[in-house]
Amino acid sequence: MCGIAGIMYKTTGTLGATGQALIDMLDGCQHRGPDSTGFALYGPSADDRLRLRFFVGEGDEAGAAVERIKASLAEHGASIAEDQIVGNNYRCTVAFTGDIQKLAYAMEHAAKVISIGTSLEIVKDVGSAHEVDDRYSVHEFRGTHGLGHVRLATESDVKPEASHPFWATGFADVAIVHNGQITNYWKMRRRLQRRGFEFTTDNDSELIAVYLADKMSQGISLKDALATSIDDLDGTFSFLASTKDEIGYAKDRLAVKPMIMYETDDLIAIASEEVSLNRLFPGQALSTMEPPPGTFNTWARST
Amino acid sequence: MGTIDLAKVPVRDANELIRKYGSAGENVTIVNPDARHHIGVGLIDPITVHVQGSAGYFCAGLTDGARFEVDNNVGWGLGDNIYSGSVVVRGNAGAIAGVGIRGAELVVHGNIGSRAGQVMKEGTLVCGGNANFMAGYMMYGGRIIILGNSGERVGEDMSGGSIFVGGDITSLGSDAEQTDLDSDEQDSILEFLDRYSLRHRGKFKKIVNAGKKLRYGTAERQMRSLPFFGFSGNSKYWNAKVQ
Image (cartoon, rainbow over all chains, first blue to last red; front, side, top):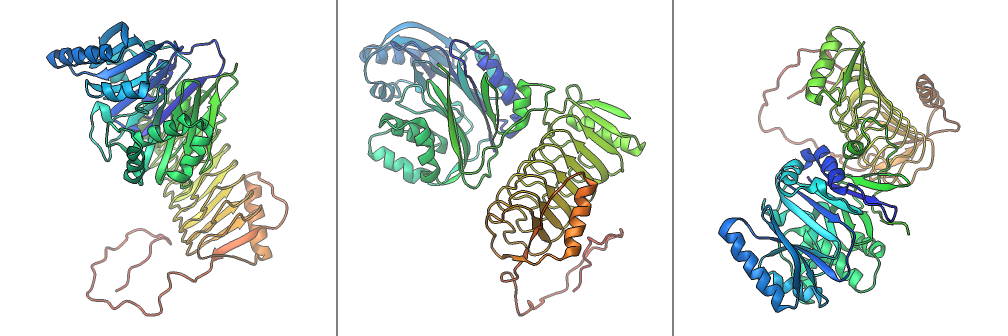
């Protein structure tokens, strides 16, 4: 069992308190996943700059990892504009115009990459929503949209890199959060690996991110990629996916994993349980909608 | 009349308070429920609990004799294993509404999620809108009344009870079949709906177990005696064990 949450402020030009909103939503469903919490946060994009986050650990271990990262970035022609250590993360913004997939695979040899994107930053760690916020100041983040996840580990370790959201390794700005189990994970993973894709964990949810990003890199829209995912993925799943401009969901035909949404003119909010949606609107009786089994949809910010 | 504000009181403490009000015979109003789970679970006194908003999972579960009124939606597992009493939900209900109910009257004015009435044994579950797939999944008894459409595979592997559908039967589940509805049953349904201010025009379609699965011609040979516990209560739901 895990809990998922997503929010998008629809109107272009406005930045919402996505960090605080996701903390509240995840705190509301922390009972669904007490061991880890994570956030995929989208801010205004800078197309000539990439935001990178790495797990580097603490103390001497962190210092050594940062040195490896800096050397590897320099080797691949990425110049650091700004950087800092936050919690056990190294966070930097770089000027880079090369192949992001090649850069991402190369950087994995320097340190565990959490995310790379022009507008995406993933923050995730073991602990509750408030504990992760205490370490990474997620509440300060204002942005356009974001995803969140509370994890109850079932088939892979309780460690920061096995928690959600998952970045689609090699594909900028694509992230997912997932509640469920992908039972044809290894079969699908091997297919993608034969085509040169790399996986950084043994978590089945990482597959969804890479699967969607692969489709989108072929020119398929997020919406169409979500549609094919319902046929291609086996098992139980309710997941949310996001790109630089869009947010979307897919739900399997068995409908074993819950999902509920609330939409206004200004925002779309989706969560595992209504209790998370009510955290955004305390004291209100919301007119919510439960997506039917085997369905998908996407939302983009208005222009 | 007591009032409990769930923005201030944790649900576990609130449920203890509800039971205290129940012991004293006082009705309770729940404000700021905000879809929190387990509201009212375990209440065994015939009081009215009014939830002013949405309730979360397992609302009114394991209760006996109380009346619940929920102004908006409920999450999964409405009235789980409820014994007697009633629950009225003005909005929608999530999946497995009425799971394992042993009695009681559960009335959802809106739509209900998948597998409503799963393994229910007695009582009545009403859906004022449409049901999602597998309503009546493995039900043993009681009745489900759906005013809208049935959803796919209605009555999947049911072994007893009846499902009445006012709209379209999307598809029948395994070992379920449509059968004739007599006028007494139609009148009984309309009388029930009238008590809860629900209306329906037209004749209901009745679905029951077809009896083609899970039937064995020869009884299994008993290898040894089994120690059975007695039941001190007086309940029609208790099946006396026999060697």
